[in-house]
Image (cartoon, rainbow, N blue to C red):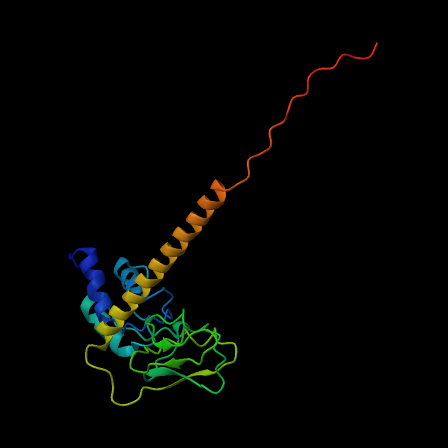
Length: 201
């Protein structure tokens, strides 16, 4: 039985995952899936991008039996990257936010493009596209560096931190607007009490 502290176990499991951050395992990213494996809440066969090789590595590290990839999570396939048909792109910007590593360049009403060397092949940009101009293609040569997974992890963490900062900035702006409106609210008119009049005799 592994007696290492849980955080260390989670980090070591996370290091064995491909860091595509595709959510196909049923968790919002590779780190949460690693935590679920460490706690026993998830099996080791839920990562289609990692496939059989990752399952084998996880089984060896955790001292578990290897098992086939769970088909409910998807199928193993060669690495792919997203590609945008620029002639069909309408610049709606809906693909930007879902990308976990900020691999898509573009802005609202402008053509978008994918930085192939950054794309993890997560496919999260496909569903939001209203004109189906995004498709998956084989990873172009040359392949990524040997430490590509760690690079992907760092980009994902930077992406997540940026989203948190943006959310905090929006909340501060909202709070400031609410405070400003509260300070400028018109005072309620005071009721003037009329003097009592004697009833006519």
